[in-house]
Structures are given as C-alpha cells and as structure tokens.
Image (cartoon, rainbow, N blue to C red; front, side, top):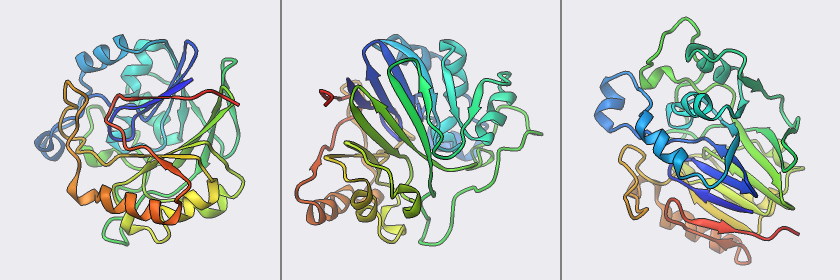
Length: 274
C-alpha cells in the first residue's frame, strides 16, 4: 500500500485498487476570494485530480468542516459515488449540496469498514488554538444557509482525527494542531500525518501525540500556504508562520528513533504491511 500528502490536510491512502481520501482539497481559492466572496469548488481542478487517481475512490473521511477540509468533498462524492464519513456538520453541508443521506455520521471510536481492505475509525480531537486561546469558527454549519457559503460559514463541527487500518499498516491523520490525550491512549499507528500550522498554540503538542500513538514515521502536513496552487513540479509555498523547521527540531530532539519524512505534495510513501 502507499500514501500521499497532496497539500493542506489532504492525504490519500491506497490499498491495491481502493483509495481513501482524507480531507481532500483541490480548489485552493486565493486569499481575496476567501476574504470577500462565497467559496465554490473548482470543478475542473477536481476532475483533473480524480483523473490522476491510480485506483477507485471508495471513501472520503473528513475530520472537520472548515472550508480547507470540506469544501471539495461534496463534489468529489458526487463524481465518485464514494462512501463519506464525518460529522453531523458534514451531513448538513452535503444536504445543502443536494446530497442528503450520503454522509455516515460517525460515532467516536466506532470502526467503519470500507470494502474488504480498509477500516476507518474517527477519534475525537480538538482544533488547534489561535493566539494560544481562541478556536476558529466553532459550531455547526447552519442548515438554513444556501450554497455557496462564505469561508466563515464553514463552521468546525465535531473534530476528529482519522485512524485507518489497511494492508497490515495503521495510519493516524491529525488534521489540526490539537488533540485529546484521553482519546489517544489506546490508539497506535505506524505512520502519523501530523498538522504543523498552529503547533505552538497547544501545550504538549506535538510531543504528547507522538508519545501516545508511538509511530515509526511522522509526516508533517498542513504547513503549506493553501491559498496558492500546488506547483506543476509538486512544489508548495511553506508558511513561515508555521515554523516547520522548529517543529521538526522539537520532534527530532524528543524522538530520535522516529523517522520524519518532510515531503513535497504528491510524493508517495510506499509501505509493505506486516
């Protein structure tokens, strides 16, 4: 099996012909659009992305419903007929998108099987903090609204980390720089996709997450400027405010035996299951 980070919190998991998308985000609207206009998925970008998928998209898991995690999910589901896992806020977004009943509203720690190759479990989590104390856009997406929504209307909803077992490998996706230690006590993973942006705002992050889930490999994600496109060569603009270098130094100092893979978007990690 293989995995791939595709910018922001977007991660792809491949097991044979089956593909799971976590927080898929292709549209990447620019800063001015985010600040001043309702947001619309870029259908052309989504189709181009799906045409490049080397398999069949079986499922989409969305950890929370901020726009950079959920904007594109309804259109991807419409085009692929994939199963969708997430929160009641995500179900509302799909209803507004004309896709009622598509989302499986997940219960914490209740595994969902995707075909015969993957098992997905949503782990309750917290969003990273802004300025050390504020959360971004808490609450549920308002079902009284109509699409397209402005960025601030994409409310957080329930916050989940996504745990995947497939091909003898365990993967944990932490899409925001927050966590609930009590929810991770029984979770273990081989590969940890770990959000960087905002990491300084949560006490104990990222060390406590790594100490709890004991990965052999950490892949930093969500440290790129998601308001600009991914380059044709897979390059991305790193957010200076994310302090990726400081994040890596902290992880390496605390966990010298853990491999850290800082990857360009769309680079594959291939793993042989145990």
